Length: 273
Image 1 (cartoon, helix red, strand yellow):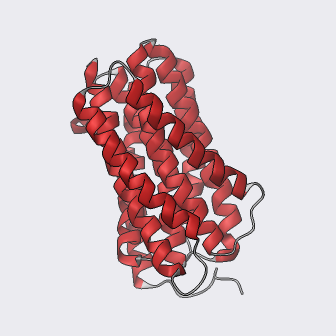
Image 2 (image 1 turned 90 degrees about the vertical axis):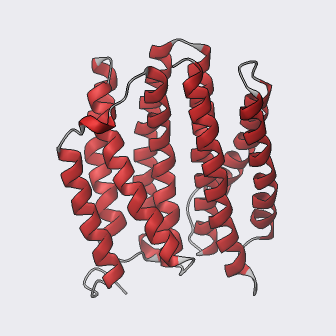
């Protein structure tokens, strides 16, 4: 059954109103939220990758009734942050090529935003939503890589890798929720496994980096502990009587890992600020 003409619940109306507010915010460059260095730009560009996956994760959680109040806050806050950072990155772009990437991202983001809040989440709409989040992720990754290359500094690469960990935590949780909703997507399992494997490899690389301070290594160890808990829930799956509980654990733990890796990314970004 199509959801296109169904009444929009109050919670969805709030999200749609928030989306309108995001558009207004994006239309006016905010002097109070500027980017001051390349490392800061790499950090925020990498955060856009994460947000593309986090929004899809929240949308899937709302559709399945998983921690809905928190998932709605995550979706609202992520949309607002993506809008604001897109404005900042376009203003900061140090080359025409990088500016072109963010110009290309803007209309794709508009389509994704409409899919996120235009109608209530529905299982049948999941393939279209994932296709859009993939396009947003690809362009966000392109911008991050361009900024890292422009930087030319070893620490820029570490900011990129640490920032990508944020995205991988959300991408893994997203694909778990795709599976828990019994949505069939080409290569979904392969993408799920690849994200998990890349996270573990990158965690080792960040820990071994000579630039890593004691504080960075401490946060990486906390992230590693959270990842073990996360992996346990992932391995047990979302089937059976405890499936909904495990899905909620995956959602919550992915947020914990995100917070830790965001802190690590910020510390790396400040090393050469």
